[in-house]
Length: 564
Image 1: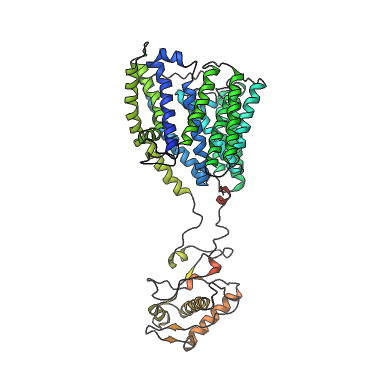
Image 2: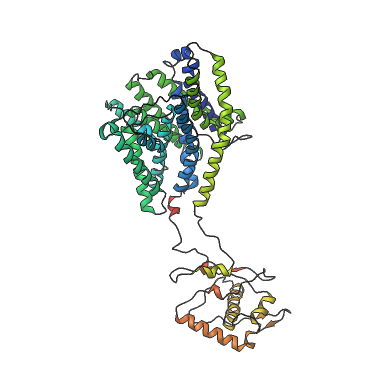
């Protein structure tokens, strides 16, 4: 899928944008050749399946970057928010116009829903799993989004059970299962589950399971998170293996290819060895080619065309990986930026051409080039008006819903008074600053509105901090039942006055400390620390060490999902 923007110079992900751009152009050629280059296509497709080449290249790129996105975020909730705002805005921007054009007779839908009602087809498309739920896609290219969504569910499942680092083993396992299914002669009707239980019930059941899986996996509690992840992973595997529109072996190969891309990403970033990634690639390629050769010619392409397309896609990805540190042409990375728009918009434009002008019986390169000339500027427009704003909204919402690891501390005593504290909770971290001469005089002033008890306690708190700095024991807790020793407070003239000169303040503070000791209070009460409207002009900044840790009850379980 496209990246967030085209780089101006060498970019760490510029080579991925280039690969996406190449894949998008090849897919467009595969579909537009039906209309403008029909004769050439009839000769090419038996030898080289251009559609499978572009799709496999897309899947390799997605497998490289999608799991890395989840691990970088470390939060399943924000991962799903990013995916929803990445895929659905552009999806809606092409599906709604296609339906409207079909109503006015400009474009004709090729999807045959048979006896399915509109509600069932709509729900299946909203989940993006329509191709795995026995529902024909409104647009032919939407079938790949179903396998993308299945891959997302599997990635989240591995992340929740702490197996996301095993991408190489997962890729090899899926590839071997594909080869075993072909060798054992496992041939299921397409789609098998829809024929067994019915398309309508399967769509409803799978849709509810998907919603539950995503919601539970996004939870901050460990048990629902693991349950939701496993449920989504099982749903994806079952649908890909037993209800896809492609044979079982090819569906498993698609998933294996995406996890191969993940293994390459781990090797590039030093999380595994290149030897391990190379062995994984060899095993996946051998199993995929062997499965295609054993399966034979399909209904839409020969095995020779499929194998050649698969090998060239893998080779193209390898070449891109080899030149990743070189400067990539900006026009090529720009194509990768708008590749998602290219992928979804071109079938709509072709449907309009078919509905108004029809197909050409003779090859016409000029019309093919004109089609690209109209398509690319239109995709730039859809990217700027639909894709980019959608991604921006997703990032904003993700920042809003992702709870920070620690809540910001407030220096306002009024805010601390508004938030009641439970005696079972640890107090918030507080900072005790030395009082300025003016504030110290205000605290002791008989005309001040502060009560003598509060004023004495403020002086005592300052004495505790000063004693900690002098003794090198910052933040030492005050012993139970004992008042802190009296300390001198500087006058506004800079001279020191002993607390012994104010017996009434000492008596009030001693009574307050005895009262706190009887009730088991050991921590400094922030409400008795006078709030200052200005910064102190002298003295060090002191933090009580007992209060620097966050609340035990306020800590979340999000740290359990971090990738380490």
